[in-house]
Image 1 (cartoon, one colour):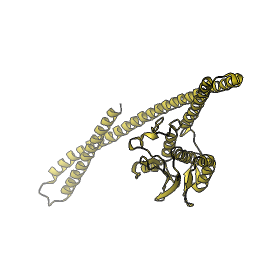
Image 2: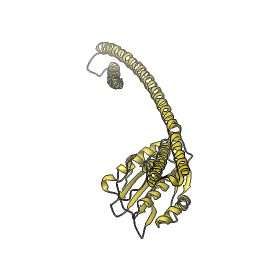
Image 3: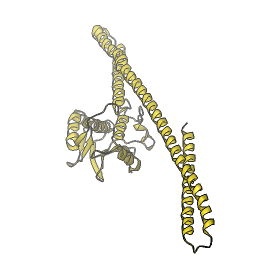
Length: 341
């Protein structure tokens, strides 16, 4: 339907320009003949001029009528085009509402129908272990422990999927976020894990103030720092550095750099896709959703995220984020023209 409308529009536009041309030519000839009629020095008499004036006046009237008709036709066409596009927009909105309802139902199924049996599995496994006590064999105990671990992993996966679905669907209040304060809170929360792995975090004291949801920014940098700790590997000088560079007055780029095991080039794009994980010798537990959540949060806020890494030499994750409130149009422009590296 749309291609036909476009072709019809071009046809009416050509017709509209032709009528304007006729109108202007007729007007020009009529003025010239009236000038010739009142100017006796011209090489033709008044009778011929008056006849031509009559003819040109008639043509001028016809052109004026065609011009008016063209305007009316164009107006009617545009009204139909507007009606069609409005109807199409309403239809798209209805489809979107229907899709959102399907997503809501899906989330309801995950949060209730899947979590309940997992909790039951964990509960009954604990009861079995307690009731059997010392009578249980080492092999049977290992099986029960594996059941509990897998049930816990499934529970974490469900929670991550729920969080992934909430990003962008639930509107978060945005504000100016002092990144020095936020980073301090994140490091304090992760300190037990950092001490266990003997990892230190270094950051400047003048990190920028960003515009966004404090909760979502915390998710982004908690995820990046946690990943850096997990994939540090055996390293006596394990260290994570946080820094930034400013991109004009609108955007700022923050980075989280580690000296861990690094990422092969062929996996550096895939790690931001849901359920994609990097094969490594550390056998790190995870769901493969964390970096997908990071990417979704960052892009919904008008930013970009990417990684620069080399196997055996650590990784550096970059997050480009707005420092001030920006319009949706500017978000698209920044995403389109933004230079990553």
